[in-house]
Length: 147
View 1 (spheres, rainbow, N blue to C red):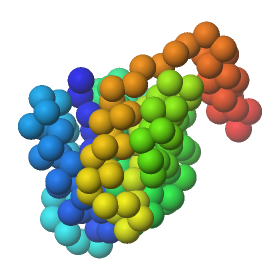
View 2 (tube, rainbow, N blue to C red; view 1 turned 90 degrees about the vertical axis):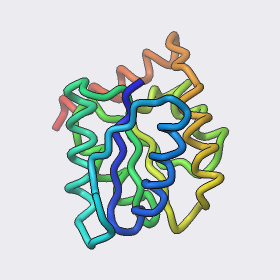
View 3 (cartoon, rainbow, N blue to C red; view 1 turned 60 degrees about the vertical axis):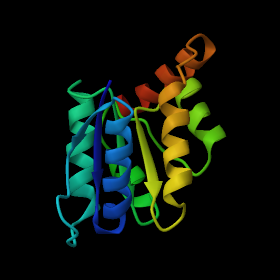
View 4 (cartoon, rainbow, N blue to C red; view 1 turned 180 degrees about the horizontal axis):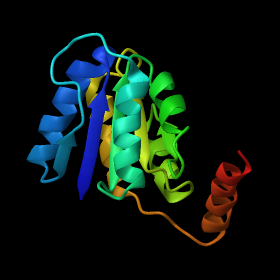
């Protein structure tokens, strides 16, 4: 599995730690920025990760900022993206099983690294259930065509 990961300055330390842990777990993690803690605009990083997923360069993505809110809003502006702001393992599992989320966003100022890692593991181990959930996801994706 190829995972894109990105952050702004508020999520830099968490991104670095998640990248190390996921790599140690055997995942292929592609760092889409930032490379050092410096102030950046979160929409720029969200777009890089979301575009990569839209183009099928990555299987899923992780975006980290201070709250996770900005990254979620920005990523969801990209066609084909279903980014979910997650703060617990149940929601992480449901984001995949019911919504087929392809990006998880995290707030480094909201949850600690241990919970963040558990959230990501729960998401990565879950599988989309399809069926009635597929119908609902397809309805969501039709909203993109309304714009």
